[in-house]
Length: 155
Image (cartoon, rainbow, N blue to C red; front, side, top):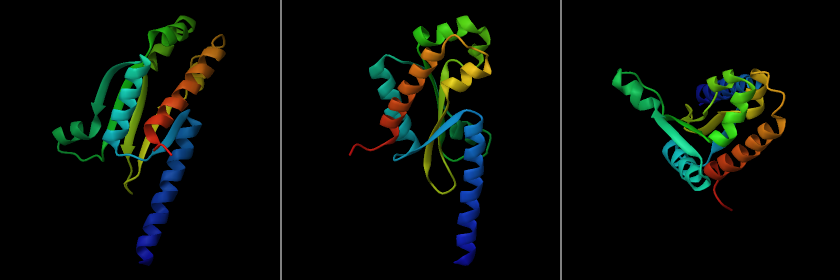
């Protein structure tokens, strides 16, 4: 039992360190109350309702299986809206490296599911965009709201 507790504590410590590093790199991470598939299905449906284009959905775990490797359930969704992304690229064409936006939904070793995405403010800072702060803040508010809807159960 003691070994199990130590292993659980080490896993929590590793995840905490990864989470802190991710946040310092502009990554927002939220725990989901749902499976990877359900979380991503919910997010995709929400995007559809809001007129946000889903360009692709990539199942990393399925890709790993094709090369005889194992990954826990992990899927990526690529999404955006040219009305919002284009102004950022007008300010810095290199913002296209981070656009369209992406969200990664994954299951960790303990079975918990998380949704992660790059904070729009980090993207604007990364590309030296100083004239689109209001747009970046709007993008951030929208992503917070929509990802909360996808990851949280209604009260």
